[in-house]
Image (cartoon, rainbow, N blue to C red):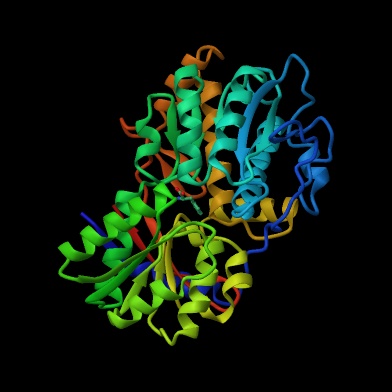
Length: 419
Ligand code: PHE
């Protein structure tokens, strides 16, 4: 049963209309200090020069010194490259969770530290980094990645090595299907694609939609497939399907073809860096209908790249900072104090992923990776800031999604859609 909860919309909007601000948790380029070889490495807690903007001190206290007594976790993220805000937000969320856990005494009498590798937003680098975390660093849990294609590359290393991996935010169905050591704390794309199909049919009353997808992204291809199927099942018509490859800069011919098909909405399930440019070119070509997207739009850089062209469009996401619950608001306050901005959904999910891992290590009878794996698999009713987490038999979390509308400087909560 799916339903759109409209009751909460008014309440949230009324409570938080005045307090909304643009998401400013991160900057684009963060140098990965301590770079060794192909990937940047930092062990937070050892140097204090982790390169987190305005918060190097915080990064430096994120983990205990890497001595023999410390439980080392690993994280792989896009700290640089095309989707750098994904990696930076994720790292911040993980660090915050570790700091809090260490302040509570750590796990089984040990402090926690995290070693972070920058994969430069590339799947090959993500795979290399996972290998390094497994064979050199002997980490207990790997957290990452954000982009599904990168998580898939990592999971192929973590699974055979039997090192538990928790992706905070990769939504493509195939990620956790790689094996029983691979988990996620977010919903999956068969649901996310449904959410925007439902929203465009029920809320926007669209009958004709076009799709513009990224052929180099498992995430984008998966979402466009689901959206197309669901929108059609709901009585809508897909009037055009066009493709691009991540990093392209000229989308005019695809957009021109879409324009001639006269859609009422255009689904663009890509990442913010491409979406910003696509939106600008769409408006330049006179396309006025709303663009619709998925969680990949989530970045403060969306406005920088897209300007007014993105305003008024909609995307599905994992959480809203407008959620008034104390759980969410306390997290936002702690994050702001540490990093100086409102946490985006990447930061929220990373915080949740690290906490699920930490809680599992506390529950596990030993710190063998197989025992940790079993404990993670038993996660039930975990109070995450991006929703309550119960892992199903496929190691996925079943959670509601929110739909937000892009405003002038931030996204505004519009609806919650439950599975
Ligand atoms: N869900 C996206 C993927 O699987 C990643 C993402 C999650 C991006 C949340 C932004 C916010 O590729």
